[in-house]
Image (cartoon, rainbow, N blue to C red; front, side):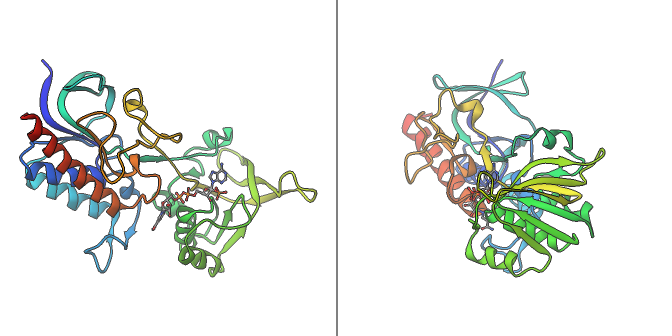
Length: 313
Ligand code: NDP
């Protein structure tokens, strides 16, 4: 027999846990599945300095543990497991967990977040775990007094380059354009750091090394008359070129934009499917902050409660 619930939350980042706090306090008896990365992307960060309420900052893992404890305190049923299939053709919606268990839910809150992008070079796979990483805060430790490169020109790349500069001997920041897209303060932080060398208008062709990364082949000003091949010696290669929203499983029913971000009715977490809400990075191509994710998680739980009471469920 399928398990029947009133509110199912998928994902355990700030959006999912906040939805769980609000939904349990509204007596919806929510069940939350944590997914592949319990605690979400913030568990891979060190210091979170911009989450209101923590004047001295807090580490990502601690913040997520606190949110989980808070949700559990109000009775949220938090479980380990992955959604492997979804049928949102009609309510109650059917969600399959780990390929076996099916849950029927009246409301669904999708807060599955986003995943780091790679360049698509065969060498990224070849050297996976041997010098290639998409998370400086997870793997930076291994590059103490070594040379590393970070790819990207946004806030993530700038933040990761600054973080790695505290550990490594030298950090190359490989930027494909002739400017950084990162915010002013982050630009200043990387430009003013003597350990960081910004390689503007450079693209990565491949990685070199015996078993582990020892260098990268780059091309400078590709397609221009002064195009030039450049080789840098590095021990670590970090990707920081953005994220892909984890919406794949829901796409047959829930409308998404061209990148895959779930579309919501502006100002609400409502999707095109009645009773199905999206919160956090999976539906946010713009802000992608822990606090905005938490805010939309709260909205999703409030909307789920209203939907259930309007339907008398
Ligand atoms: P962004 O989309 O902002 O930036 C991605 C960067 O990667 C761009 O510089 C882009 O280049 C580059 N890039 C993309 N694809 C490739 C490729 N194939 N080859 C080379 N370079 C590539 O992503 P971020 O993850 O940096 O940031 C996402 C959002 O999160 C932003 O809104 C950001 O402000 C926010 N953020 C905020 C933080 C904070 O406030 N503390 C920390 C981190 C992120 P190009 O510019 O040429 O397109």
